Image (cartoon, rainbow, N blue to C red; front, side):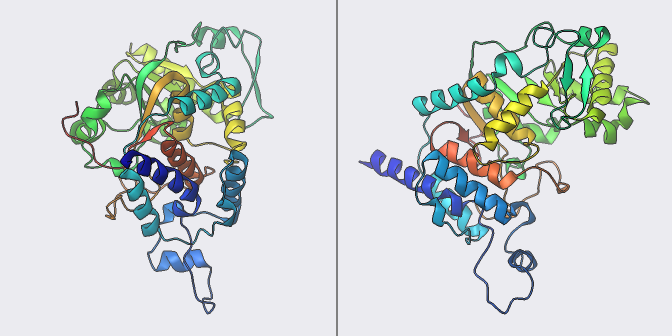
Length: 381
């Protein structure tokens, strides 16, 4: 009976997620002169990370209708951030369990669309010499694959059709600070990380050290390593902490990324680094954007986090994700930093983080993936 009540609670909360999650607006008096969002930010009721405009609200409502959920067309999105966190806390009281039929169905849809095993990375097999590669973020721009470029591609995909048992996808959210999740993360069979985060020293107890794949935004190469035109050793040295992980770069998303990504590969080859550099296939990113667009995330660029979660859902039997949290406070209501390693707020983005988090929480409630939102046991079994 208790299990039935818990399942019923999860189902009810999943239907209610659309107005509990992104909770942007609260009721306001007609005498307010400025916009509701401005008032809320001045009153410090809502953090700047949880802003949703009317278009985003409509996208969520439309996607809910398409997916068969009922009742979301009447959501008002007038809950406070505190209310949203409170209801997520209630959801956390129910023990999560993987729902194999839901996982298989979602994985099957992803494979039909995107086929990560064969098409996520650019290889000599899927991108023959002479191919005109189209940039996914600049579709009018193309790059002809010449012999020198072709030779730096791996012959075949680095991923096997044999799935990893349990994978951990690590975001960089401040919710990971003091989480003690490091040991649990390191027990995963495959660990994905995003944008070259720090994992050594004081951070390891919260985020672990195991890394099988790490992404790097080429803007980091430009801003932190001077485009790798000058001294290159710091880049090689800073990547030692990732051992023999795959370094995954979006070399063919924007034309400015190509040279930076190639120089990163040459640098690591010249210093005989353990890491192997691979590149996102722009067609995979294009198809993945279309996949999520049909589900309400209609943006020019998906976040790296959602891309990697999607990849993991195809490659792994079970996916646990950490460090994904759009609120300015943790689940206990305590103010936290934007990242677990600093409080640098993001630049105005083309991503739709609230909408993405909505879908992640929805998949959590359906047993498709596990979204870790609290501290971990210090000595997990």
